[in-house]
Image 1: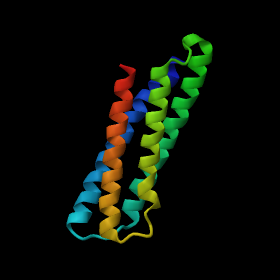
Image 2: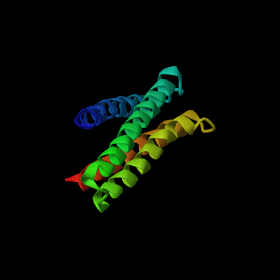
Image 3: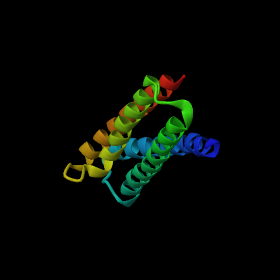
Length: 127
């Protein structure tokens, strides 16, 4: 079970790196009036995939550790709910296909930043 928590903890850094790359790339493209192309879609897909893996690991750990004796105190439920909201926001950039490129970049940046704020809050709940 400890290895599951370690993987869950390490994966968050990959999510932060990909989110930072996406914010940088989307900001440059937004400022330069770029178009949403393959690399942009790839960043959105990578972010969604990493977040899905993180949520699956977290949910398995939540249930496994909870039933193994740690229980389900309120702070663990709050962490779970906040992280589910963050995961939902991280999926939005991949769903904005109907918008123009400029709007798509700006909304994607806002969603990723908002999700990172939620992740920060979700981690603070555990401390």
